[in-house]
Amino acid sequence: MQLRFIGIDPNTGGTGSPTVWVDEETLDLAFQGWKADEKTEAECEATVVPGHAPGIPEHETVIRIPARMVSMIRKACDVAERGELR
Image (cartoon, rainbow, N blue to C red; front, top):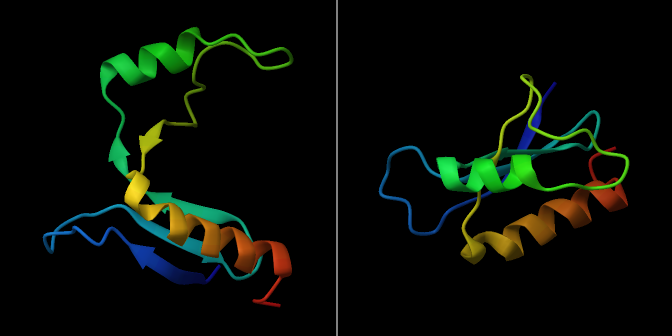
């Protein structure tokens, strides 16, 4: 697996920051973000969606990505959708 860096939170202070990558083999998106707070996780767990089991499975997590990174996420989606890495 090789990840192509797409972008990092422009307000980073040089430490861990929300980041977006695209997996060059699978075209999956990879996100590094802030851990969701308990209130956000509780709301996600309580949301009922047809065909979706309630709760957050042990192998999954909820992260937060700042809205200022939307353009980077769009770019990552475009790269993955167009298969620009293959």
